[in-house]
Image 1 (tube, rainbow, N blue to C red):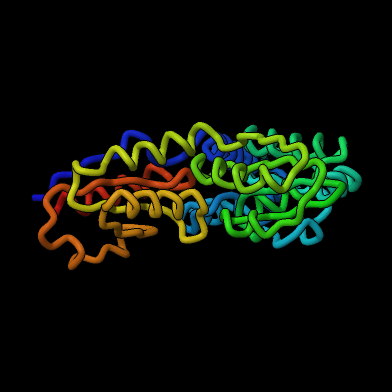
Image 2: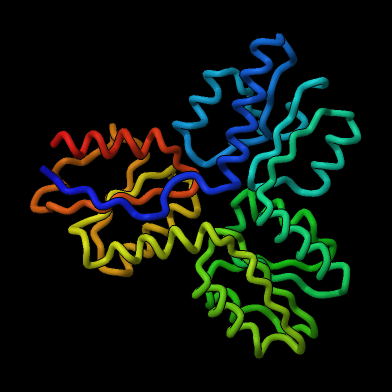
Length: 283
């Protein structure tokens, strides 16, 4: 029988749990009170299994704000939305439940604040990620998105620069980007907008090193924070099996491994983690 070693921080973070709980409450009250439809702009979290569960309960998902019908209750996901989208929804008189993660909101506010003071904004993160796109929506002036030190080194010199991070990045990378920007800026302000829950989950994965023969990482393929956990595990010499659900288990990967570490991204629900653990325990 395999021994399971659980990372001491795994699964839903505060912001994701807050958003999912609010959506579930709205769906359950709508069902009993026969109220209007409940919509989310984009996937409420980056976990397809949990999103499928919410859709089965009645959640409707729009690709953009224009697809939301008038009179619907609209949930803003933890990743947030650009300022223009929020203003447009308010202008239509929609009922908005803003579930933007407080850490994401802080990054939005910092971006808007420094932009209004004349700083050029540099964002550390994935330009395609909805959180970064939402933060960019609060910037009125120049903004660049960089994913690594090399991209930061290619930026032009500027008088005033503010560096702001996607909340799921690694602090070591943020420090490296900041160092690369020092010779590029007459004045450089660095905002550590990486959330504590992200750091805690990353440290928990590091602590598995030397204690397990491999790590099963449970999380959505589109989850940025789960991808970072994979990178950290590999960088610390651990063999990693990244799966979205127990159905994706590759049993050949387990051969020769007795101690199995379990880690999960901040958008992975507990029920999925439990299913994976139970399936491994039965082998």
